Amino acid sequence: MNYKEMGGIKGGRNAPSHHEHNAKGSDKNPFGKAETKAELLARMKVAADKLKATK
Figure (cartoon, rainbow, N blue to C red):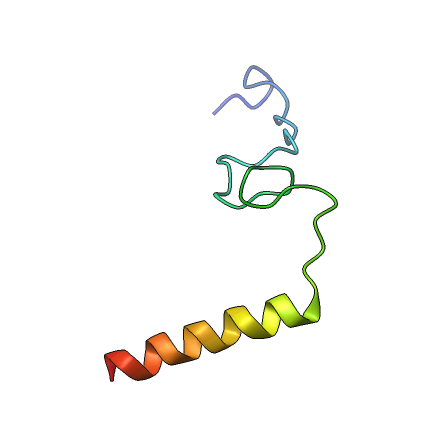
């Protein structure tokens, strides 16, 4: 095997191979939107009730 003719290693591209569905700055997760504690608790209660209803 002639390693001289193979060329150098390819450097990283430093970019993800796909986009996340809830990436920062997207419609689902916009920049500057901070959820208040009351909103978080309300969302958690709804999720807990939904989980209890399925069991």
